[in-house]
Image 1 (cartoon, rainbow, N blue to C red):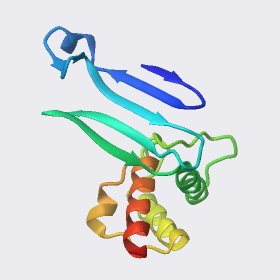
Image 2: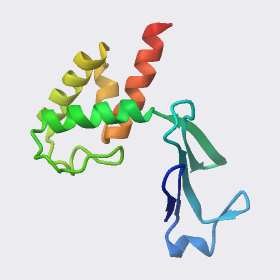
Image 3: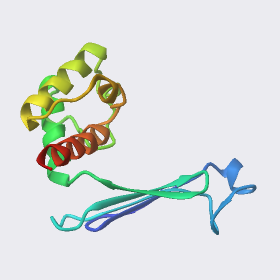
Image 4: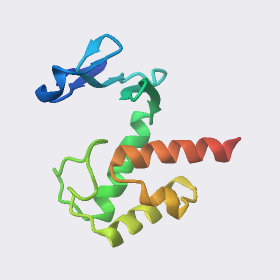
Length: 142
């Protein structure tokens, strides 16, 4: 995996056992590429390999991810200095199913949204939550 700070670029590859037999649209072994910037007008972009090529999705703004991180830390009463990032999973942070429900309720209150139960069950990382929040906030404003 490679990454560059500032304008963040990260690339993850498939395990070595797959590299010999699989090539994705001329890029051998590429599984995930993420591009992000600290600038407000530059969206984060994630490219993920899909069965027939790449899937492009825009990730949540850094401000949204940061606010979600703060809410997760608060809901789980994590000690100061505990690192919570977009890639952090609720399970890795020690959250059980009840904690996850409480996190979702805190996010609903903080962002003025309502998360459907089906959508809530698909949230496993902070990034998942931030992406869903931005989608719901955008849908609410239109």
